Structures are given as C-alpha cells and as structure tokens.
Length: 362
Image 1 (cartoon, rainbow, N blue to C red):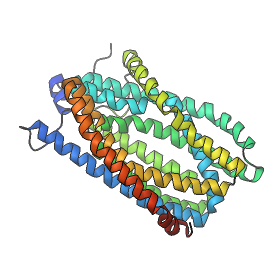
Image 2 (image 1 turned 180 degrees about the vertical axis):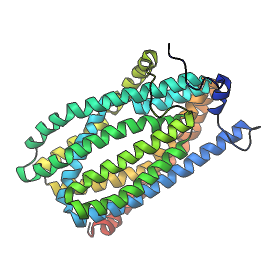
Image 3 (image 1 turned 90 degrees about the vertical axis):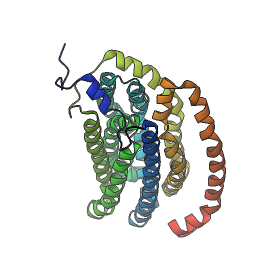
Image 4 (image 1 turned 120 degrees about the horizontal axis):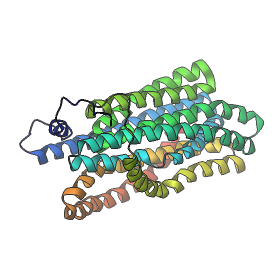
C-alpha cells in the first residue's frame, strides 16, 4: 500500500483544518451562520453579475452575428449539453459526500471522495467527447441545411471540449460546496463571467463566428484551473489526483445515478425544443428562444442558487441532528413559496419592457 502523503502531520490536525475557521472559535454555530450568510451574499452577487454580463453579451451578439447565427450557436451548445449525461451525476453528488464525511470528521474519506470523483470524471469526460463528436456530426446534417451546417460543425469541437472541461471543473466546484465554501465557488464563477464578457467581443471581432467557440473554451479552461487550485489548497492535496478507491466509486455511483435520472428530462428537453424549433421554424426563432430561456434561468437562479447553499448544511444536520432537518426544511419552504410566487409574477409583467430594451421590439 502506498503511504499517505503529508505523513508528518497528524490525522487530528488535518481533520481540524477541514472544520470552519473564523475569529469566533469559541462559538462554532456563530461561525457556521456567518459562513452561510457570506455564501448567500456572494451567490446573489454572482447571479446579478452573470445576468448583467449576459444581457450585454447577447445584445452584442444580436447585432454582431444576428439571431440566425445565434440560433446555430444555441443548438450546438444544447446538443453538447446532452453529452453531460455521461458524467453519471458525479459532480453534483460530490457535494453530499464531501459534506457527509466532513461532518463525521473522516478527513481521509473526504480526500478519497474528491480524488476518486475527479479521476472518474476525467475518464468519463474523455469518453463523452469520443462518443458524442461522431454522433452529433451524424445528427446535425439531418436537422440543418448545408449553409448552416458548416458553421455548426466549426463550433462543435469547441463546445464538446468545453463541456468536458466543465464536467471535470464541476467536481472541484462541488467540493467547495461540500466544504461550505460556496463563496469561493461563486467568486470563481464571477471572474469567469467577466472574462467571458471580455473574450466574446474581442474574439468575435477578430475571428468571426468561430470566436464564440474560443471564448467558450477560454472560460471553461479558466474555471477548471481556478477551481482545481482552490479546492486542492483548501484540502491540502496535490495538484495531481492519484487515489482512486473502488468502494468510494461504488458508493457515489449508487447515489449519483439516482440523482442523474431526475435530471435526464431537463438535459433532453432544451436540445429537443431547439432542434424542433429550428427544423419547423427558423434559426432566428431559436436565437430569440435562447435569449428568452437564458433570461428566465438567470431570474430563477437568484432563488435556486441561494437555496442550494443549504445542501451541505442539511447533509451535516442529517448526520448530527436528523430531527432538525424537517424543521429547517419547513423554515426554508414557507418563505421560498411566497417569494417565488411574487417574483415570477413580477418577471412575467416585466417581459414586454425587457424585450423592448433588449432587442428593440416586443
């Protein structure tokens, strides 16, 4: 058996490093509450920054390449997203297992979960690109005419590789969530959004339509590098993951596949809608549909992303205070139901004004 790294440090010392740190060490509940509030604030900032940048990015693209080209871009991205089904839900499920073993103070198990998940996702991402590149290359000619097909095929490798990179990045981002450091996760995403907002106009002006692919690749590469280094620093593991444990893989696989089944419809719904809209309608309609769905998703993210920061907290309570989980769920659900009802009603009323500002007409 290969000896564990950093053997000069005791397990107790390393386990203590995984616990929340703050100025008020005598009151861990206060530290946890402060961290949750910090996570929530940074999450809201991230959603707002993303919404603002996406508003201007889409407005720029509407003028620079037109709605039809945006429709092509949207279809290629949607089809590439389907390939994420092959990650078996590992990235999303890692939040639970990191939080679970952290709650039990099983520090070695946390490290094994992270490294096993990362190595598994690297293999799955490579298989995803190898499988879906020829598959989508076969499908696209059957839903697009020859003129649009060339642009779509130019973007396809960029989009697939970008989503493969994001799949691996998701393991590190989920690790930060499991460590209750959603603030760091969202700071990375804010930086990536700003970078994307700079790359889009620069690369589209210089390279034309294919500049969209390079911008997407640059953004996903930045997320991977930043998430990788941040998670490794927080867990004090090497930059190159080496440990793969079959028992951890099987444990995560059982949970992740169940989680993935619930999201298959969401993965398939958007690409199928865009394909049908492009085939029976126009690519310009797909472009406008992309803008509309992106707007609604950004509004929705204000509510859902803040709610998601509670996943590691609920996991911790599940291990230490199961009776408290039901109380917490009730406390979260009641205001969330009211907020969503009012919020989405306001969004629906604002749609004509948003359309007028964004594209110049309703």
